Image 1: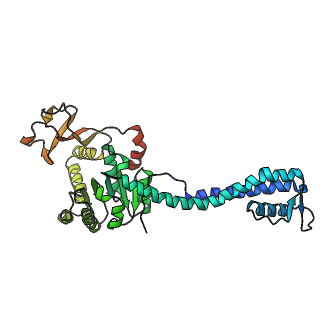
Image 2: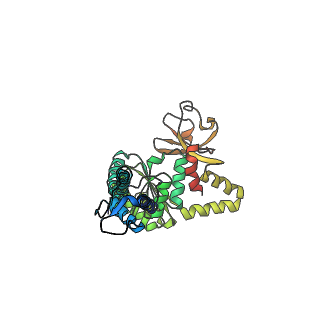
Image 3: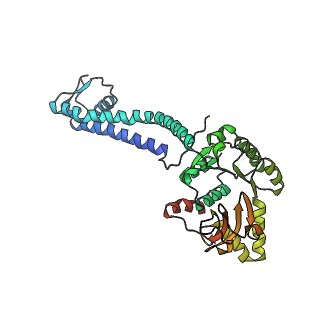
Amino acid sequence: MLSLVSLPRIATSPFKELARRSLLALGLLMLTTMLVWVDRGAYIDNTGGDGVSFIDALYYATVTVTTTGYGDITPIAPHARLINALIITPLRITFLVVLVGTTIEVLANQGSRAIKDSFWRKKMRNHIVVIGYGTKGRSAVNTLRRQGEKPDKIVVIDANTAAVNEANFDGYAAFQGDATRRSLLRRAEVSKARQVIISLDRDDASILTTLTVRQLNPTAGVIVSVREHDNVPLVRQSGASAVVTSSETVGRLLGLSAIGPELGTIMQDMLTGAEGLEVHQRLATADEVGQPPSAVLGERVIGVIRNGTLRRFYDKSATRIEIGDELIVVRRAQPPSPKDKNILRSFDD
């Protein structure tokens, strides 16, 4: 089955929508029935029955709104025919639109999805693909958003339906399926991505996914999370640009907290963001060029990236900031904008 992009949306449940339309159709049928029943003296039963009963009115309403029209019950009074022309006929049309429109809408939505998928793929360039939208993947996306990444440049891939729905609710395009399949990665435009973050639960799946991603995109940054340190060399050989060992990272944070709770608090503070301290990477401004890193106001420079090479704050080649340098700084956490608060709150919850 072809995997189409699931774009961000908050849609009404299809079951609720079907129930709503069914109740609307039933309401139209009952309204028609009551119009005939109240004015039953203006109708004649050509089959020879004794007047028009409620069952007859319901029968007439049913065959009328469905345009069957057997003609056995007909309006004879002028006002009854006028009511049929001005009220019951529009009700009949509305009834058909409700029922037939449901089928047409389903078919139209399928075509619309294919068109939206094609349009989305054509315009998607230089984006970030996050494979795995569990706790680690959501935290990674949370960090990207806090660093200023736009939501329409983040694409999620996950095999779990709930995770894909959650990604859509949070405002991101998503694909459901196995990330080791080339066809799925191609539909997510991995070959045109700037970064790929792989945060799967199993190391073997992470390794196979890394190999597949690297074959499709030799130049993108591929950041992979693994559980066991022993798998780090294998992941790097598979083409990962950076590897994060989740168990080792958590263990180190636990050890630092045991040495000094305040030390652990500072480290967790920088990793959490939104309050306290945060680590940020940015381009050096024109005013900072020629100045030592220590002269930067309001931030503490801990690293300088020059010509693609990281120079830490103690490196003698990084005593002056040059044009084109990127600075890695520790700064006071920037509060999210009002537009992003609702989305970011969902991560924290």
